[in-house]
Length: 231
Image 1 (tube, rainbow, N blue to C red):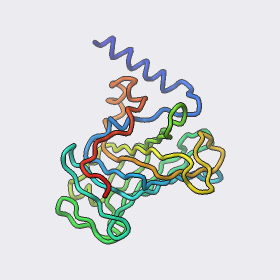
Image 2 (image 1 turned 45 degrees about the horizontal axis):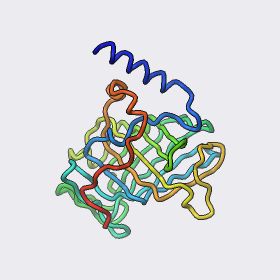
Image 3 (image 1 turned 30 degrees about the horizontal axis):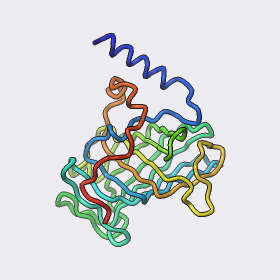
């Protein structure tokens, strides 16, 4: 068993260190995300500015799941809703070059989650983006993953969200922005993609994930069951 774990670890490390055409290894699969889970559905937009190396994500929250069978909606746009904004620097090779920021905030009206009321301007979650991965080759939908650490905000204070490592998974549909250029794996040009779906949830620690095997590198597909459907 020890030998199996040893060779699995070596194989994963070799894969991570080897060049991959038009892609950098994803940090995790969406199937590795835990709970609670905040999701958005077709509301996300990813934008990259090659002159400043700035990658941004803006998305409106759909719901929060506390377990596979329980959850709550997170308002309805435009009267009562929260949104997530992520900003980081990515160079022309697709590598993150500085710690980014993630902030989730009530933008309008008020939200009630587990009996707690949050009003416009309240910060639900915020943290530092410390790692970034993406995949564009041999798949029909581009995929992006982020690790967020040093979490704080009202959901942490109220015990709804843990302070452990959180992962964000984003899968935008390509070439949907009018008059825009979709992502082709080229970080030397400006691009923009919309109708992005995604999840934000706790993930295992990096060392634990390496021991899980090479299955962490390939995606299991965007198929998490939702407690509530978009109304």
